[in-house]
Image 1 (cartoon, rainbow over the protein chains, first blue to last red):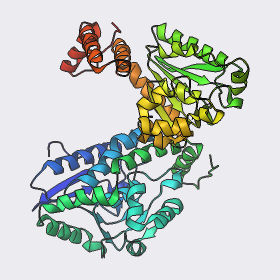
Image 2: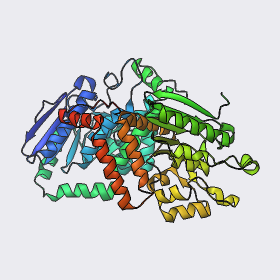
Image 3: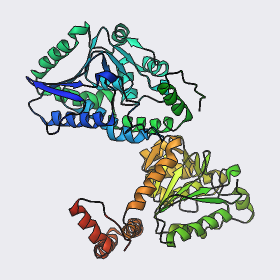
Length: 264
Length: 251
């Protein structure tokens, strides 16, 4: 690695790289610094021929709580945030990289995966999910639309109807229900999550070169135009991010009260 | 609300925004509107400060075509359109809702088109027993090809914004709410380019459709060699080598 990772760790052992998001006090919520650095990490791992599989996990109780709403670089306290630019520069390139890197990426979902955290988990090729973990789309809770690829990956993982339900209702989906919905590669005991994810990664790392081509093939033939989907998320998030409802959602979140959406 | 047929704003340095303002008639292009628009564009073209012009309508319509009442009485005055087509300053059409007949011809008179997904673009003149008269048969055919243009002009087929993008008629198709912001972004990007080079390049692109490939390639070479001698060209090369952003002088 050429630069020191910010707010995450990278360990490489026996052809498997483990990326651990490391803002445990914030359930590994994503700041602009972390996102920039995480993208650099994925790019470096893509170039590193010695790395043949990647595990993504979170430190502490959470997998990833999504966008850090207190990150001043993304959501300045004194003016309206430019969500479109954030998606274009950070989430879009990161999610596209995870979906197109020709090495298997395994999410070890050790705890809550919310909003863009769920987006990252769903962008991974496999999800090893702890029994104590949970998923929630979260975006509509603050008046936004799903981004970080979730509008693209989720319908492909659980079907259109369930995806729409998860995105509109934004309920907390516990691990058992997530498994029933098809979100999980495997449901495991909490203390086995990282071990099982690494075991899967090791097995894949011993696989043939064609695994990378399988991923390229399925992305192209099985799931469609990733880049166009991310661009469309960016446009719609720019619309949603410009509404009074979003500002109300943000304000309510900060004040820890229920939002009073006006439908505008 | 003003009664003026067009409204002019200055949303950013070097960027002019012109709103067609006849909302009750879906921004139908009266002779007075076209004359005012042509005069405004000529003004931007020569004021030395405007680097890009965004042309838009409202949510329901960019422009729904000629003013049919006026069309029936005094007839359209098409010579005013030449003044719009002669502009050296780049024009961007931001299209929501209807861009029909003269409305689509006006949008196609621009250098870049941003359209809403649910925009409706068409040349329905045939339904009135006439045909396009301000570039509709020519610019449309060059943009989408003879196959689609024939359906549109002879059968009145409309394209959605998405189709317009797919067929090469529009540069960007975005959700309706994003049309103006995206058009303004493009305008700001144009405003940051070397102004003289943008104008020469715009004119040279137009030649691709006006003369033979051979003649156009010679014109391109001449324009390129001339631009190489400008201060902006020297600045652009220097800035590239110094890994910094160029500071254009417009010379």
